Length: 501
Picture 1: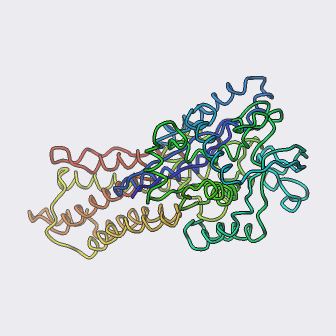
Picture 2 (picture 1 turned 135 degrees about the vertical axis):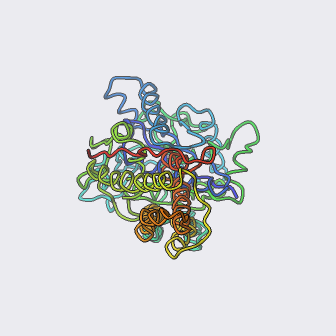
Picture 3 (picture 1 turned 120 degrees about the vertical axis):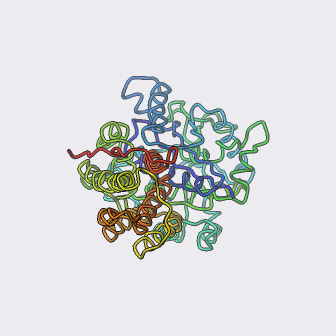
């Protein structure tokens, strides 16, 4: 069964920050995990470029809008190498010809359904969110996300009949046809629907958009609202609206597989209400799951480009390495609740788990195989209690990781991998291979030592296998270190450098 996983596409008014890197890494883990289990996977990311935020940022810098978005989009796409990302496609909404054609096609389908009408209105608009807010949605008159006072905007635009789809959306979510996780976010969406859905504006005047954006079909004085435009990327990237039959669309969106969106909690209503309603209007299949993560914070504040407290993920990798950054994001961020980031915490976690955990275990095991068996992994002829327990933990590890990732719980999945380290170290403490080796001075080979070393090497290989989705580079180093060449394990050298030294 196909598995199509996507990230949101961020605005490119500035360089990327660590908050978006979290979503990229989470999606990458899901994609790599499904591939490792033999699944057919497509992983999409990209950039949202047809935004007023991008126009204003370019004006502030005194550069052309296209130049600004090209420069910053390259920084987002460039995260693939430092973060070890495996996306199959990266869409840019201002440059990719698939996108404009697809957005136009999607608009026309909704128009044919009778779901657009023109309306003059006045509203409170937050440029940071690119969204209108009702007075009841503001906090002391300010945007709840950015803390700024929205601008008052008056104009005549196209509106979408969101209210028409209220009952359908409620049924899809309550039935589980559209799964929203965790449950607290599902309940949040249902509460929003129960409060009554209001039609929303889906275009902006060409003048206010400074001429930037995709023109509304049949109305050149209007451009498509940035959220309508951006949400379409999940299907425009698959060729919807193209000249040729959209084989990719049929394969990844219209088939029986899973369609999974990863989103931050701040954009939940767009992905769990607006986007499904758009698809219902257009007569297209819906996503199957919307997985919602909370925020990364610095000193308790959400990491934000506009707030200026950006932690650059590429620079962080330059200082501490890909493995350390990925592991902190996966091991420390809870399924529910914000996570506060500091470099000290990243270093402490990397030194404890990577150098002191994975690296130390593999080094100990390989060193003992060389010391006691000349680098040749023995064939066990007996089973001890300690080795039996270790093998049982290894056998359960895959299922535990599967269950945790299916529940969108990366911290628990990472902990399931970590149990291999804990149990392997317990096995060493119980079997004490160095003492078993002393009994061989009489010339009798210790079957218990063979059993211990064989089980420990197997555990290290299993550790490497289960780490593949989380730390692909480290996993390959571990597997290489524990795989014989010409019958002998490679000599042990440090897998990780201690960062706190």
